[in-house]
Image: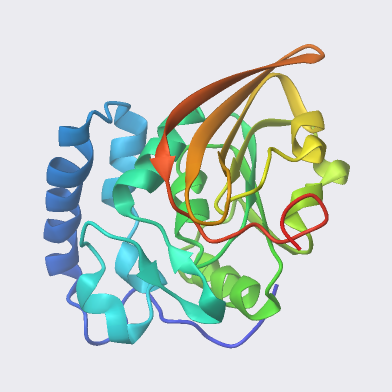
Length: 228
């Protein structure tokens, strides 16, 4: 996709060497200490410059232990939650992955270090364009950005080894469950708008097994199989 320029990785106002140190500290204190142990996930979290995905007015908080606001009333998730949801996908490097809710693009950038092919869907055209430009700047060539209703998935690219949803649905969309390959994993926050549980679904032929992980709070997933 093409669109207006977003911040480049070398954008003035944030020292790259300082950000490397902050990323190391973020991984050690916020992620490893909370039990994330998949070294592929840890290396991805160390590698991706989170600050370039955050609006300038909040960039000084880029490596803080919290979610942050971005445009269109959306958020970039807390680093620990990004790492946890990524680890739950059980990626080994050769998978085709679908992300629902591109947002800032940070989660897709993490996934690009762990999967062969990443598809990400965003309903806000402006966010999709900004994320696509950032992926180009960062030379992340295995990500494809799509604009549309993420609750319906991408049937033309299915099946997927893993699907991650970065907004909360009232229940797991059947369209996404149907687009998992056998043994495929869906990680999604589910529940009312005020509070949800993070769930992992695993497809076993035509059956699905669900696990409850922990309590979370996400922006609502809007679409035909989400919230109105």
